[in-house]
Image (cartoon, rainbow, N blue to C red; front, side, top):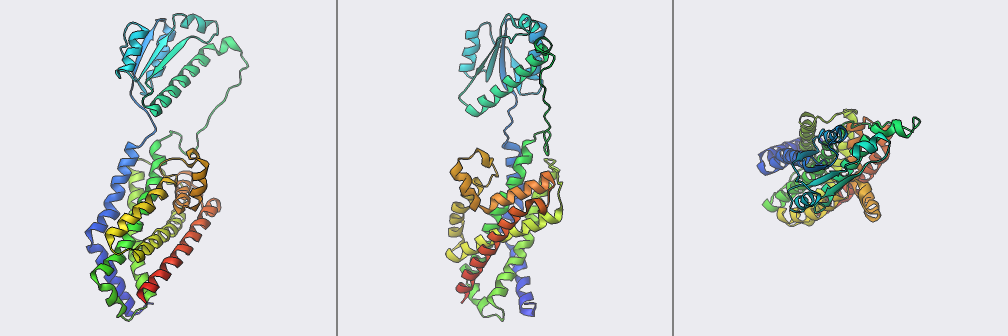
Length: 369
């Protein structure tokens, strides 16, 4: 295994990989573009919605409510017209995203401990934005009423205090970045590992390797080692972007992340090697990989929580190795937990890696025979 033939083959694989500019772009540029796009563009937060207000009360209390609505930059206050019909028309025409009508008895009802009249108009064409805006308004109005009326209702009202753990600021990029790291590693690992083998097949050098004094196992290992190195560089670049640009924490043990990532790299490389054994060329392998990577990504929890999926797809995701890797990434990076907590996911990744690597290696040896 450590003979001169193996070392020469390993050196050849490193040089070939470094000369392949297309693969280097996939490994280095792809994580940068994907992380910037998903981390900055995909966000459940809604900001700067155009809010029209019709204030019949014109009291200090109503002005306080309006100040609460615009204080967190969710809404931008815009002149709304003179009547409810005008306000509704502007929402209908798309000039406003939301409208709020404050009743004339707003201040008086607050003083006597009643729930005052507040009407909210929302543009429901974008259902997601309308739902989030409605929740914002209802929460702000409810908190405002409670603060102003609790002394009138009862001095012994039950109060609650919420503590948000691991992501106190609810930074949405902290949810997306670990998922994108796993997603990019999945795509790059499958494409690069399949491309390195298919390049040998297309150029006819695979037959020449059979004439060298090395075994098929040594040929496979010589191809795996350079891929391991460049995929770990891929992870390093992704983590640097996540921590440097999005200020994502790294609370766990780097060694745990290294071992877990090693298992998942073996998983994606096994898929890529198996793909190379059934494909005639790199173009065919790339087309087939799309049918593999898209369901894997969609059912992994990388871009959408698993809890929001129908039960059938939640059960189907149990056969998805990327699901377990993303759970481990979020656990190590955000929660700071180790293998003592993540061992069920690590065990699942080990089983996937062992089975898939054994199958892909067996198919590779048969092709080399």
